[in-house]
Image (cartoon, rainbow, N blue to C red; front, side, top):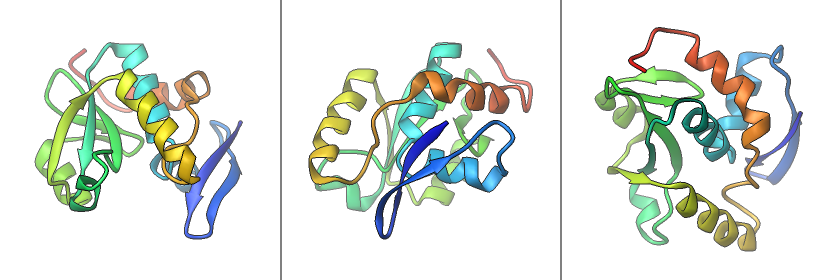
Length: 141
């Protein structure tokens, strides 16, 4: 599957499969496709979506990252399951707020006008990667 990722040089295409190196898969789902991954986990589990906000996000109201919260209160993204304090420290988050798929679609439209930010949603293509993370450890769902 080919995804577009954000780099310091602008968007670039990156091909990944379930057999790709872990760092390549993480790059795709951290830099521009986190929302697709979070929506895939949400679709598989029904767990709530959350937006991760940093100080720089306060200008436009769009989060730096989109994640999911499991029933045990852990945050889930391509890097796995983490408790809130650990996640907030890693991401330098100032706030983490509930979001919904409509918020995400609006952010994609707004950010794509500038050529940066969230890439077009690829939920179906993200499901195999979401399953792999969900199967990586027991969870409360």
